[in-house]
Image (cartoon, rainbow over all chains, first blue to last red; front, side):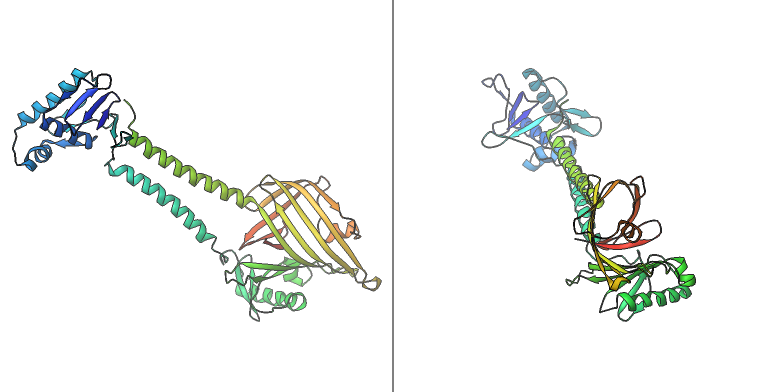
Length: 245
Length: 162
Protein backbone atom coordinates (compact mmCIF):
# COMPACT_ATOMS: atom_id res chain seq x y z
CA UNK A 1 0.00 0.00 0.00
CA UNK A 2 1.34 3.42 -0.94
CA UNK A 3 0.40 6.93 0.22
CA UNK A 4 1.09 9.52 -2.44
CA UNK A 5 1.34 13.18 -1.47
CA UNK A 6 -0.21 12.30 1.91
CA UNK A 7 -3.79 12.21 0.56
CA UNK A 8 -3.88 9.51 -2.12
CA UNK A 9 -3.81 5.82 -1.31
CA UNK A 10 -2.85 3.08 -3.71
CA UNK A 11 -3.43 -0.57 -2.81
CA UNK A 12 -1.33 -2.53 -5.29
CA UNK A 13 -2.73 -5.84 -4.03
CA UNK A 14 -6.30 -4.88 -4.94
CA UNK A 15 -5.45 -2.43 -7.77
CA UNK A 16 -7.41 0.34 -6.09
CA UNK A 17 -6.81 4.04 -5.48
CA UNK A 18 -8.72 6.44 -3.26
CA UNK A 19 -8.57 9.75 -1.47
CA UNK A 20 -7.82 9.85 2.24
CA UNK A 21 -11.18 11.48 2.93
CA UNK A 22 -13.22 9.08 0.84
CA UNK A 23 -12.01 5.63 1.71
CA UNK A 24 -15.38 4.14 0.81
CA UNK A 25 -15.18 5.41 -2.75
CA UNK A 26 -12.28 3.41 -4.11
CA UNK A 27 -11.46 3.57 -7.79
CA UNK A 28 -10.59 0.26 -9.34
CA UNK A 29 -7.66 0.31 -11.79
CA UNK A 30 -7.17 -2.15 -14.64
CA UNK A 31 -4.48 -4.69 -13.72
CA UNK A 32 -2.08 -3.36 -16.39
CA UNK A 33 -2.50 0.26 -15.25
CA UNK A 34 -1.87 -0.88 -11.68
CA UNK A 35 1.33 -2.64 -12.71
CA UNK A 36 2.55 0.48 -14.55
CA UNK A 37 1.78 2.65 -11.51
CA UNK A 38 3.63 0.21 -9.26
CA UNK A 39 6.65 0.13 -11.58
CA UNK A 40 6.83 3.93 -11.72
CA UNK A 41 6.43 4.25 -7.94
CA UNK A 42 9.25 1.81 -7.33
CA UNK A 43 11.48 3.70 -9.74
CA UNK A 44 10.70 7.27 -8.78
CA UNK A 45 13.20 9.75 -10.17
CA UNK A 46 14.24 7.39 -12.95
CA UNK A 47 13.17 7.75 -16.54
CA UNK A 48 11.56 4.46 -17.53
CA UNK A 49 11.99 3.80 -21.20
CA UNK A 50 9.07 2.51 -23.19
CA UNK A 51 11.04 -0.67 -23.98
CA UNK A 52 11.63 -1.29 -20.30
CA UNK A 53 7.96 -0.79 -19.49
CA UNK A 54 6.95 -3.12 -22.32
CA UNK A 55 9.30 -5.79 -20.94
CA UNK A 56 8.18 -5.39 -17.33
CA UNK A 57 4.44 -5.07 -17.93
CA UNK A 58 3.74 -7.16 -21.01
CA UNK A 59 6.65 -9.25 -22.34
CA UNK A 60 7.35 -10.86 -18.97
CA UNK A 61 3.72 -11.98 -18.93
CA UNK A 62 3.90 -13.32 -22.48
CA UNK A 63 2.00 -10.42 -24.04
CA UNK A 64 2.72 -7.57 -26.42
CA UNK A 65 1.56 -3.98 -26.58
CA UNK A 66 1.92 -0.91 -28.75
CA UNK A 67 3.06 2.61 -27.90
CA UNK A 68 -0.53 3.72 -28.19
CA UNK A 69 -1.68 1.17 -25.61
CA UNK A 70 0.98 2.34 -23.19
CA UNK A 71 0.00 5.99 -23.75
CA UNK A 72 -3.62 5.12 -23.04
CA UNK A 73 -2.79 3.45 -19.74
CA UNK A 74 -0.64 6.40 -18.65
CA UNK A 75 -3.43 8.80 -19.60
CA UNK A 76 -5.87 6.67 -17.66
CA UNK A 77 -3.70 6.83 -14.54
CA UNK A 78 -3.38 10.62 -14.81
CA UNK A 79 -7.12 10.96 -15.31
CA UNK A 80 -8.05 8.70 -12.37
CA UNK A 81 -5.78 10.63 -10.01
CA UNK A 82 -7.10 13.95 -11.29
CA UNK A 83 -10.62 12.74 -10.60
CA UNK A 84 -9.58 12.06 -7.00
CA UNK A 85 -8.31 15.65 -6.74
CA UNK A 86 -4.63 15.13 -7.38
CA UNK A 87 -2.97 18.35 -8.50
CA UNK A 88 0.40 18.43 -10.11
CA UNK A 89 2.15 16.05 -12.41
CA UNK A 90 2.01 12.42 -11.35
CA UNK A 91 3.69 11.01 -14.44
CA UNK A 92 5.84 13.08 -16.76
CA UNK A 93 6.28 12.23 -20.39
CA UNK A 94 9.92 12.55 -21.37
CA UNK A 95 10.01 13.04 -25.11
CA UNK A 96 11.75 10.23 -26.96
CA UNK A 97 12.86 8.72 -23.63
CA UNK A 98 9.88 7.38 -21.77
CA UNK A 99 8.01 8.22 -18.57
CA UNK A 100 9.12 9.58 -15.23
CA UNK A 101 7.51 9.76 -11.82
CA UNK A 102 9.10 12.88 -10.20
CA UNK A 103 11.56 12.08 -7.44
CA UNK A 104 10.26 14.86 -5.19
CA UNK A 105 6.82 13.31 -5.12
CA UNK A 106 6.08 12.48 -1.48
CA UNK A 107 5.47 8.76 -1.25
CA UNK A 108 5.22 6.46 1.75
CA UNK A 109 4.76 2.72 1.75
CA UNK A 110 2.62 1.15 4.44
CA UNK A 111 3.86 -2.01 6.09
CA UNK A 112 1.83 -5.08 6.83
CA UNK A 113 0.59 -3.76 10.17
CA UNK A 114 -0.24 -0.41 8.71
CA UNK A 115 2.84 1.42 9.91
CA UNK A 116 4.39 3.74 7.37
CA UNK A 117 7.78 2.60 6.14
CA UNK A 118 10.01 4.40 3.73
CA UNK A 119 10.20 3.05 0.23
CA UNK A 120 13.64 1.63 -0.33
CA UNK A 121 15.54 4.14 -2.33
CA UNK A 122 17.23 2.37 -5.13
CA UNK A 123 19.38 5.34 -6.06
CA UNK A 124 22.99 4.31 -5.53
CA UNK A 125 24.08 7.93 -4.91
CA UNK A 126 22.75 8.06 -1.35
CA UNK A 127 24.48 4.87 -0.35
CA UNK A 128 27.73 6.18 -1.80
CA UNK A 129 27.41 9.38 0.26
CA UNK A 130 26.78 7.41 3.47
CA UNK A 131 29.56 4.93 2.77
CA UNK A 132 31.95 7.81 1.95
CA UNK A 133 31.07 9.61 5.19
CA UNK A 134 31.52 6.44 7.26
CA UNK A 135 34.85 5.78 5.51
CA UNK A 136 35.93 9.37 6.23
CA UNK A 137 35.15 8.89 9.90
CA UNK A 138 36.90 5.51 10.02
CA UNK A 139 40.00 6.87 8.24
CA UNK A 140 40.12 9.80 10.68
CA UNK A 141 39.97 7.51 13.71
CA UNK A 142 42.43 4.96 12.30
CA UNK A 143 44.77 7.78 11.21
CA UNK A 144 44.70 9.32 14.65
CA UNK A 145 45.30 5.93 16.29
CA UNK A 146 48.19 5.31 13.88
CA UNK A 147 49.78 8.70 14.59
CA UNK A 148 49.44 8.13 18.33
CA UNK A 149 50.45 4.49 18.27
CA UNK A 150 53.48 5.28 20.43
CA UNK A 151 57.09 5.78 19.75
CA UNK A 152 58.53 8.96 18.43
CA UNK A 153 59.12 10.32 15.05
CA UNK A 154 62.84 10.53 14.52
CA UNK A 155 62.23 13.39 12.08
CA UNK A 156 61.77 15.55 15.19
CA UNK A 157 65.31 14.87 16.41
CA UNK A 158 68.69 14.15 14.84
CA UNK A 159 71.06 11.45 15.99
CA UNK A 160 74.64 12.57 16.54
CA UNK A 161 75.98 9.25 17.77
CA UNK A 162 75.89 6.83 20.68
CA UNK A 163 77.37 6.58 24.13
CA UNK A 164 77.51 2.93 25.11
CA UNK A 165 74.18 1.42 24.07
CA UNK A 166 72.38 4.77 24.30
CA UNK A 167 71.70 6.96 21.28
CA UNK A 168 72.26 10.70 21.57
CA UNK A 169 69.98 13.07 19.69
CA UNK A 170 69.81 16.80 19.10
CA UNK A 171 66.95 19.04 18.10
CA UNK A 172 68.62 20.16 14.89
CA UNK A 173 70.80 18.73 12.15
CA UNK A 174 74.58 18.93 12.55
CA UNK A 175 77.46 18.53 10.16
CA UNK A 176 79.56 15.38 10.80
CA UNK A 177 82.35 17.55 12.27
CA UNK A 178 80.18 19.49 14.76
CA UNK A 179 78.24 16.33 15.59
CA UNK A 180 81.52 14.74 16.66
CA UNK A 181 82.40 17.71 18.92
CA UNK A 182 78.92 17.80 20.42
CA UNK A 183 78.89 14.05 20.99
CA UNK A 184 82.16 14.43 22.95
CA UNK A 185 80.65 17.25 25.05
CA UNK A 186 77.46 15.24 25.58
CA UNK A 187 79.54 12.25 26.70
CA UNK A 188 81.24 14.40 29.34
CA UNK A 189 77.85 15.35 30.80
CA UNK A 190 76.54 11.80 30.50
CA UNK A 191 79.53 10.28 32.31
CA UNK A 192 79.39 12.95 35.01
CA UNK A 193 75.65 13.24 35.71
CA UNK A 194 73.53 10.61 33.96
CA UNK A 195 75.40 7.50 32.81
CA UNK A 196 73.96 5.22 30.17
CA UNK A 197 72.51 2.26 32.02
CA UNK A 198 70.94 0.30 29.21
CA UNK A 199 68.69 1.10 26.34
CA UNK A 200 67.96 4.78 27.01
CA UNK A 201 68.12 7.80 24.76
CA UNK A 202 69.64 11.22 25.36
CA UNK A 203 68.60 14.58 24.00
CA UNK A 204 71.37 17.13 24.15
CA UNK A 205 71.15 20.88 23.70
CA UNK A 206 74.36 22.87 24.35
CA UNK A 207 74.68 26.62 24.05
CA UNK A 208 77.01 27.96 21.38
CA UNK A 209 79.50 29.02 24.08
CA UNK A 210 79.90 25.44 25.25
CA UNK A 211 80.68 24.29 21.75
CA UNK A 212 83.08 27.19 21.11
CA UNK A 213 84.97 27.40 24.41
CA UNK A 214 83.37 24.96 26.84
CA UNK A 215 82.09 27.81 29.05
CA UNK A 216 78.34 28.02 28.45
CA UNK A 217 75.13 26.42 29.61
CA UNK A 218 74.12 22.96 28.44
CA UNK A 219 71.08 20.74 28.76
CA UNK A 220 70.89 16.98 28.49
CA UNK A 221 68.11 14.60 29.36
CA UNK A 222 68.21 10.82 29.69
CA UNK A 223 64.93 9.14 28.86
CA UNK A 224 64.00 5.56 29.61
CA UNK A 225 61.38 3.69 27.64
CA UNK A 226 58.27 2.05 29.01
CA UNK A 227 58.52 -1.71 29.47
CA UNK A 228 55.56 -2.49 27.20
CA UNK A 229 57.67 -2.04 24.07
CA UNK A 230 55.59 0.94 22.93
CA UNK A 231 58.71 3.14 22.57
CA UNK A 232 57.02 5.73 24.77
CA UNK A 233 59.02 7.41 27.47
CA UNK A 234 58.57 6.20 31.03
CA UNK A 235 60.46 9.13 32.45
CA UNK A 236 63.30 11.54 31.78
CA UNK A 237 66.12 12.79 33.96
CA UNK A 238 67.01 16.38 33.05
CA UNK A 239 70.41 17.90 33.73
CA UNK A 240 71.05 21.59 33.23
CA UNK A 241 74.52 22.92 33.74
CA UNK A 242 74.99 26.67 34.16
CA UNK A 243 78.13 28.35 32.77
CA UNK A 244 81.13 28.16 35.04
CA UNK A 245 81.59 31.39 36.99
CA UNK B 1 7.09 20.06 -3.49
CA UNK B 2 7.70 18.07 -0.34
CA UNK B 3 11.15 16.88 0.43
CA UNK B 4 11.52 13.23 -0.17
CA UNK B 5 11.76 11.32 3.12
CA UNK B 6 14.58 9.12 1.84
CA UNK B 7 16.66 12.12 0.83
CA UNK B 8 16.02 13.78 4.18
CA UNK B 9 17.18 10.64 6.00
CA UNK B 10 20.37 10.48 3.94
CA UNK B 11 21.17 14.14 4.55
CA UNK B 12 20.44 13.65 8.26
CA UNK B 13 22.79 10.65 8.50
CA UNK B 14 25.55 12.51 6.64
CA UNK B 15 25.13 15.55 8.91
CA UNK B 16 25.30 13.33 12.00
CA UNK B 17 28.49 11.63 10.77
CA UNK B 18 30.10 14.95 9.88
CA UNK B 19 29.10 16.36 13.28
CA UNK B 20 30.69 13.34 15.01
CA UNK B 21 33.87 13.85 12.95
CA UNK B 22 33.89 17.55 13.82
CA UNK B 23 33.30 16.83 17.51
CA UNK B 24 36.11 14.28 17.39
CA UNK B 25 38.50 16.87 15.94
CA UNK B 26 37.43 19.49 18.49
CA UNK B 27 38.03 16.92 21.25
CA UNK B 28 41.50 16.12 19.85
CA UNK B 29 42.31 19.81 19.49
CA UNK B 30 41.29 20.49 23.09
CA UNK B 31 43.21 17.46 24.29
CA UNK B 32 46.20 18.66 22.29
CA UNK B 33 46.18 21.94 24.20
CA UNK B 34 46.34 20.14 27.53
CA UNK B 35 49.69 19.46 29.10
CA UNK B 36 49.96 17.21 32.13
CA UNK B 37 53.42 15.88 32.79
CA UNK B 38 56.20 15.35 35.28
CA UNK B 39 59.95 15.81 35.10
CA UNK B 40 62.93 14.97 37.30
CA UNK B 41 65.72 17.49 37.16
CA UNK B 42 69.27 18.06 38.36
CA UNK B 43 70.67 21.57 38.03
CA UNK B 44 74.34 22.38 38.35
CA UNK B 45 74.85 26.09 39.23
CA UNK B 46 78.66 26.02 38.72
CA UNK B 47 78.94 29.13 40.94
CA UNK B 48 81.22 27.72 43.63
CA UNK B 49 78.46 28.23 46.24
CA UNK B 50 75.83 25.67 45.33
CA UNK B 51 76.64 22.10 44.38
CA UNK B 52 73.26 21.24 42.90
CA UNK B 53 69.50 21.79 42.99
CA UNK B 54 67.50 18.67 42.24
CA UNK B 55 63.88 17.64 42.41
CA UNK B 56 60.73 17.12 40.45
CA UNK B 57 58.53 19.44 38.48
CA UNK B 58 54.94 18.69 37.54
CA UNK B 59 53.19 20.78 34.94
CA UNK B 60 49.50 21.14 34.15
CA UNK B 61 48.14 23.34 31.38
CA UNK B 62 44.36 23.00 31.46
CA UNK B 63 42.08 23.54 28.50
CA UNK B 64 40.51 26.54 30.28
CA UNK B 65 43.72 28.59 29.90
CA UNK B 66 44.89 28.10 33.48
CA UNK B 67 48.14 26.40 34.39
CA UNK B 68 50.06 25.16 37.42
CA UNK B 69 53.61 24.09 38.01
CA UNK B 70 54.81 22.44 41.20
CA UNK B 71 58.50 22.42 42.03
CA UNK B 72 59.83 20.35 44.90
CA UNK B 73 63.28 19.15 45.81
CA UNK B 74 66.46 20.10 47.56
CA UNK B 75 69.49 22.32 47.05
CA UNK B 76 72.91 21.49 48.44
CA UNK B 77 75.51 24.08 49.23
CA UNK B 78 79.16 23.50 48.43
CA UNK B 79 80.11 25.53 51.46
CA UNK B 80 78.75 25.16 55.01
CA UNK B 81 79.61 21.45 55.07
CA UNK B 82 77.18 20.72 52.27
CA UNK B 83 74.09 22.09 54.00
CA UNK B 84 70.87 21.05 52.32
CA UNK B 85 67.87 23.35 51.77
CA UNK B 86 64.41 22.32 50.68
CA UNK B 87 62.19 23.98 48.17
CA UNK B 88 58.50 23.37 47.53
CA UNK B 89 56.77 26.00 45.44
CA UNK B 90 53.51 26.18 43.58
CA UNK B 91 53.18 28.38 40.56
CA UNK B 92 49.83 29.40 39.11
CA UNK B 93 49.25 31.37 35.90
CA UNK B 94 46.93 31.97 33.02
CA UNK B 95 48.28 31.23 29.59
CA UNK B 96 47.66 31.71 25.93
CA UNK B 97 49.05 29.45 23.25
CA UNK B 98 50.33 31.87 20.62
CA UNK B 99 51.39 29.22 18.14
CA UNK B 100 52.29 25.54 17.96
CA UNK B 101 55.23 25.90 20.37
CA UNK B 102 54.91 29.22 22.19
CA UNK B 103 52.96 30.01 25.34
CA UNK B 104 52.50 33.45 26.89
CA UNK B 105 52.07 33.29 30.66
CA UNK B 106 50.30 36.03 32.61
CA UNK B 107 49.47 36.69 36.25
CA UNK B 108 52.23 34.35 37.35
CA UNK B 109 52.04 33.83 41.12
CA UNK B 110 54.53 31.64 42.96
CA UNK B 111 53.59 30.46 46.45
CA UNK B 112 55.96 28.92 48.96
CA UNK B 113 55.07 25.96 51.14
CA UNK B 114 55.92 25.90 54.83
CA UNK B 115 58.95 23.61 54.67
CA UNK B 116 60.60 25.68 51.94
CA UNK B 117 63.76 27.29 53.33
CA UNK B 118 65.55 28.06 50.08
CA UNK B 119 66.35 31.69 49.45
CA UNK B 120 64.09 33.26 46.80
CA UNK B 121 67.06 34.68 44.95
CA UNK B 122 68.57 31.21 44.53
CA UNK B 123 65.28 29.76 43.37
CA UNK B 124 64.82 32.60 40.88
CA UNK B 125 68.37 32.31 39.58
CA UNK B 126 68.54 28.57 39.10
CA UNK B 127 65.02 27.20 38.86
CA UNK B 128 62.41 29.69 37.82
CA UNK B 129 61.83 33.41 37.63
CA UNK B 130 59.28 35.55 35.84
CA UNK B 131 59.33 39.21 34.87
CA UNK B 132 58.35 41.96 37.29
CA UNK B 133 55.04 42.23 35.38
CA UNK B 134 54.32 38.61 36.32
CA UNK B 135 54.59 37.47 32.72
CA UNK B 136 56.74 34.89 31.03
CA UNK B 137 57.27 33.14 27.76
CA UNK B 138 57.59 29.37 27.45
CA UNK B 139 58.56 27.23 24.50
CA UNK B 140 56.95 23.80 24.60
CA UNK B 141 57.85 21.19 21.99
CA UNK B 142 55.96 17.91 21.87
CA UNK B 143 58.39 15.03 21.71
CA UNK B 144 57.08 11.46 21.81
CA UNK B 145 54.85 11.34 24.90
CA UNK B 146 56.67 14.21 26.54
CA UNK B 147 57.06 17.96 26.33
CA UNK B 148 60.39 19.65 25.99
CA UNK B 149 59.90 22.80 28.04
CA UNK B 150 62.19 25.79 28.05
CA UNK B 151 62.57 29.44 27.23
CA UNK B 152 63.84 31.31 24.17
CA UNK B 153 67.41 30.26 25.02
CA UNK B 154 66.84 26.53 25.12
CA UNK B 155 65.12 23.60 26.79
CA UNK B 156 65.31 23.01 30.55
CA UNK B 157 63.06 20.00 31.10
CA UNK B 158 61.66 17.04 29.25
CA UNK B 159 58.40 16.57 31.02
CA UNK B 160 56.76 13.15 30.42
CA UNK B 161 52.98 12.71 30.27
CA UNK B 162 51.44 11.23 33.38
